[in-house]
Image 1 (cartoon, rainbow, N blue to C red):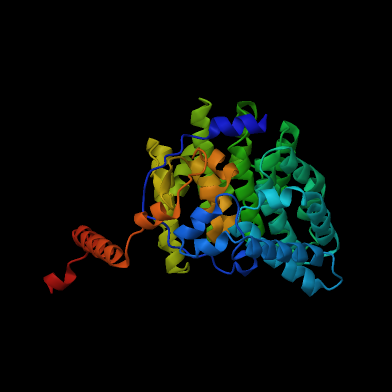
Image 2 (image 1 turned 90 degrees about the vertical axis):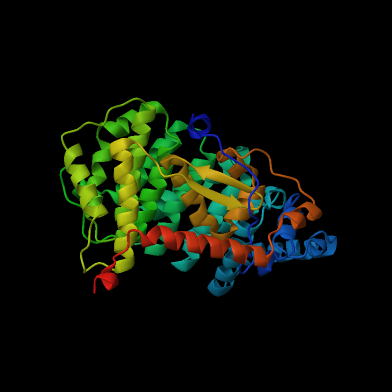
Length: 427
């Protein structure tokens, strides 16, 4: 089953004391004081006034605003519906509201379905994003599965409709992948979603032995990202079928004109090699050497017709990809949030984190601290319960941060000066 496979794929998530996050939640006017059971700690940590968070009157006021926004989803005015969807998106991404949404999920699901069916362009895109966040709030239980199953056919219909808005199709691609990852209980749902997404980023004209179209957009990136996310929870039997032939559709995407798609394709290829190691399959193929040559070119590309920033980012990422494919080394990344941190020590964990970060935005830190679903996915254990005094004592002063940054800058300058060009000394 996909859910049990997901638990097996996750490595142990490290957690230890670290520097508290100072990032302020932007634009969360809708729920500036709404709190869940563990929200008081997070608000105190961010300096948002924990004493105000616990006031029942302000919580009720915030809930009333949420109810009003939900009612506005059925308004006749498209602008009113879009404003309500935008407010719900900000609220769901910045706070944990599972208890509040539990008894209102059916009404909200029906409203989102109407927005997806009757709305146009931006409204459909916003509705897809809110649906993803709703599923994330509901979790992987029966409630989340119910939300996913009820709207899956509509998401697939919009995604595969070439006449639909590109923004709406992109949002539906993300929603389909994320909701399937969170709530799909049957292997049939997982396989059907994989096939649907694969048909978007790899149409028949870009099959094995062909060349990818030169023009790609955000839709192809979202479809590929969702497809690779679902690969991380596939059972070994389906992984083997992907390794047999489907992964060969990825190398042509390395020639895309979109730097984002080239990078995503490279990361997905690294993920496929990692999954092959997990199931003890060998990916030696007649095109493997050509693939490595492609990766080397992208890791050292210096064409002037590409933007300097794009070239730098592409070279950095493809060096990591090439190093992993050749030697199996992965450059570990540390993510800090509040008093904890976690380690991204594999391409599977990195893909999962990036997918949730894209949906939640700046709210990823809050959800990593308080959302039980995310903490289960990354192996962080139950949420920490800390009082305001402990959070205040753990804060680092501005002066201490300045000293730390100055020392880090000095050490970085010394390390880099050894390999910098000394042309001035020669002259």
